[in-house]
Image 1 (cartoon, helix red, strand yellow):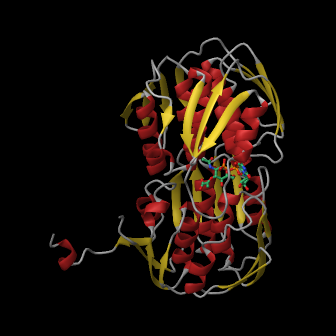
Image 2 (cartoon, protein in one colour):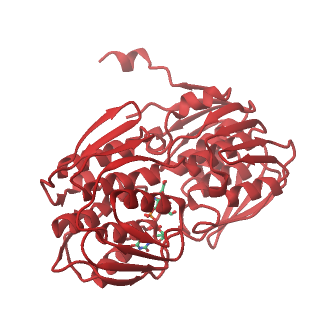
Image 3 (tube, helix red, strand yellow):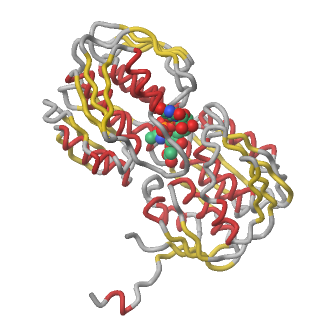
Length: 424
Ligand code: EPU
């Protein structure tokens, strides 16, 4: 188990930071490498726990891979197994989409119910319905889905609601073969567009990525190539909120402001100075920001993955802010922990009222990636020392967190190992 993180809060963060590549773009792209017999090289892959877990699963299915710094070489000349076992899939929800890739390449696949961040119900019914609508036969028994296709997936999928993973699942299943698949109410996230760009590089024909109607025309066989993953808008947003919570100043290099409109406009309206270029964002905090309300929703709305971080930020802003999450209405595991730091939060009918005020250090715990991001932001803003447990969750999504916070002047250290603990 990872040791707790100790943060001596109350210091404004200042400095420059280069944004890391996007975890949620890298994950489907790694799975997409299963579609081709040819080698694929990915530049700028984040060195994160979730990536390692997925690589373990890909290796189990037949992928050979090698790291060269942050460049990842992947090669799957043959799929050696079509079963994705519980031990590997249960660690991370994103691994469920290997089903689409296995169906495309081998015509069959078996995948356990996925695991992942436990912040409320996260079903896979939309994935299953979509694949069935395309003619795939799927059976579920004891938490394992077995899928087989007679011909090639074909036709139209209409999602009841946009789903990032469901859209990726269909894109994968439709990438090979002589047929055409249309997705209506597709997810619009930049990570979907990045994934579509990657698949197009392999030879899949895709129209309408980033719009609600996307058409995928499969190819007989796909090629390989070299691809660079987009910067992580959620990581970038988390650091902006950390800087704003401590009333600091930062230049985020490599950030893509066009992916971050919802957050940047909130920060500007709150009174912070936000200046952007094509690939950078500069934030200079005001000492007296205004509170604001947040409705987290699908892209281009305010991202649900920044809902816990923005809640932590709002807990430092005097006044009342109302927060709702329309994607995951129960994504509030961070609320009880923020209260330990002195935040006044009232959750009623899935609306969180945040009464901002000064926070003070305490011992708290992260339960999932973005809830952990919220803990870190609140701890940085709080006066005194905060000890954060559960850092293994945070490491799934934020690369080199400690070093990057130090780079911005934060006082951060791991808990000293006590002698009696070190004895064995
Ligand atoms: N949904 C269903 N049935 C399904 C699929 C989704 O009801 O079969 C619901 C979900 O419960 C949720 C909504 O649809 O209410 C949208 O979920 P979506 O499928 O879009 O989420 P996801 O693909 O499982 C990705 C990210 C999450 C992020 C969500 C929403 C990856 C690997 N994960 O999950 O990121 O919160 O989209 O934007 O891309 C994170 O990075 O910490 C994280 C959890």
